[in-house]
Length: 94
Image (cartoon, rainbow, N blue to C red):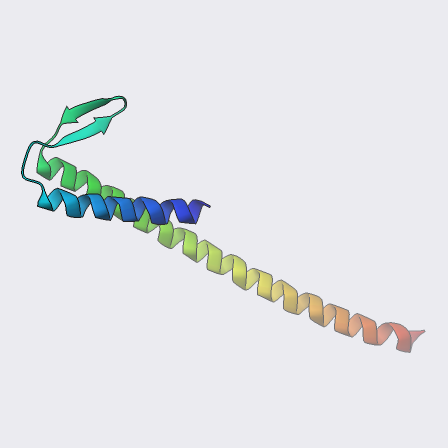
C-alpha cells in the first residue's frame, strides 16, 4: 500500500512539474483550504523536492522489500532442509 502511494505521489509530482513548465499565467499553490499566489521557480523547487523525496523513499522501500524477500527465501530453504532431514531421521531412528 505504501509503495503504491509513493509511486502515485512521484507520478503526480512529475506530471505537475510538466504542466508547470507549460504555464504562462499567474500560479497558485494550495495551502490548507486556501490558494496562495506563488512564483514559478518556487513551485518548481517544491515539486522537485517532492519528487526527489518520493523517489528516495521508494528506493528505500524497495531495498527493504528485497531484504525481506531474501530472508523469506532463506527461511524456506532452512525449513525445507529441516523437514527433509527430520523426516528421514525420524522413521530410521525408530
